[in-house]
Image (cartoon, rainbow, N blue to C red; front, side):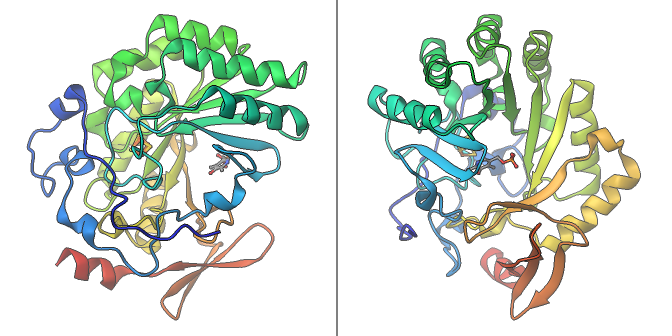
Length: 338
Ligand SMILES: *Cc1c(COP(=O)(O)O)cnc(C)c1O
Ligand code: SF4
């Protein structure tokens, strides 16, 4: 089921004091940090192929707040709020739409579902930002899931931007509890989009996690005018390795309403990937990927899977050789910007 695009579903504005302090200017045209938290009128331009639920997540929700799109892993929407609202957020129809966090009855239903589906071996905890929950509530989630599956070992993946927007949230106490209550199988996936986000406070947060045995991966969103530059991405991915963070995905922008000004073409992304491979260790290379607009899941974008442009759409091949479409919108984006 496709959720209708609603103009009144606006992503709230909000930024942590810490993240705002990283901006050198409050002009989103000039500063890559400001561009990620300052709302601009470009968000009012909604293109016909954009929608509020670009990945058709609603279609894959067997119980409230649980998305089951791949056989072995589920994604739990644990909390709607974030410490900073990223203007490029693709889950904007959900993020910030209420004050809420998962209620006990929804957690119980989600845990029961995971317990009843023995093919599930990984739970992604996402939102919003799940680290907006306090430690006790987070522990509740890990404990409920573990209790529901019994001896079946679950891996937990916590998707959070807190290390970037509020690194003080990553405490020793939190890292210890995640390790203990997640039975040593908690991974963190964060989102660093620009080298200026890798501050000493960010590095300290990474030390705190990795020293506790919690591996950290990073997902970068490819953002036009912010990080669609070979030098910027080289510095970003090599810098992440130095703080023991593995670059995991580089995401092509999802087709969320009012975000076209942030998207590059896929050709630009492929060129950047070629350039990076010449400069970076294989360990520092992320997979360039897109979440298919028709709810088809993620696919890697390479010279082999991107089969050119037809009628204004890129033709993309998935692992099974099936074709999918993603709009080629170079001129559209320019028109919106201009
Ligand atoms: C991205 C995503 C995953 C995880 O995919 P990986 O390729 O394993 O990182 C799982 N479930 C949903 C719904 C997702 O969007
Ligand atoms: S932290 Fe994540 S969920 Fe929150 S606004 Fe940013 S991208 Fe969206």
